[in-house]
Length: 235
Image 1 (cartoon, rainbow, N blue to C red):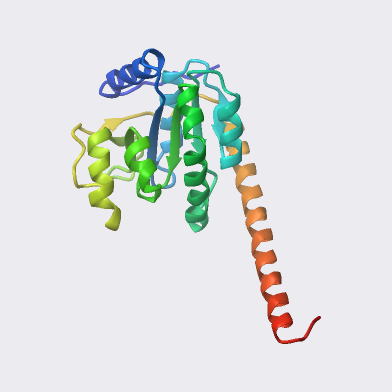
Image 2 (image 1 turned 135 degrees about the vertical axis):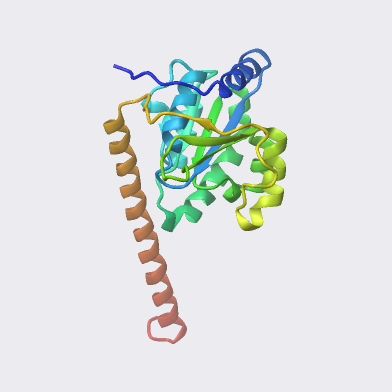
């Protein structure tokens, strides 16, 4: 049974505008939600996704670029898809390289299917410049309150988001320009089964770690073989 959740009053009219643009004006909509690990950005993404698409379920949450592309191509029009990359701080840069490539590669598909896409990442500033400035329509920055509690975020609409990227990228600074809206709040309420979500995300992360190790071993092996070959130790 689904738990109830509340969308901040400030965000409600924005969601209505987004739905109208996608369903009645033949558009797609890309939103980025970023924030520190554990800040609750994935939960907020689910709540917004459910508000945009009543059919939204756990199968529309993708944990890597391959899942995202496959789901995007197989989803009906006006679906909402979340790309919630299963990475840790240690490998986030490598993961985001894949994210940037996949987003650019499926941009046309997203428009044709009039999809809502929510990208959940540690920092908006790590996105490709073209995608951050021209394809992303809005940014939600989730943060911890002064007392360490979760459930706070700032909304940056299209113009504010653009200048934030240009002015703040060098130092990852979210203060200039400031959001034109006051801080919003959300509850820690999943719209999908929490245990199933955590299980799928953990599995995706485990597969990524194994894949990265295999790549590293191959690189080391190839480097060793190349060195031996160059020194005429093997023929």
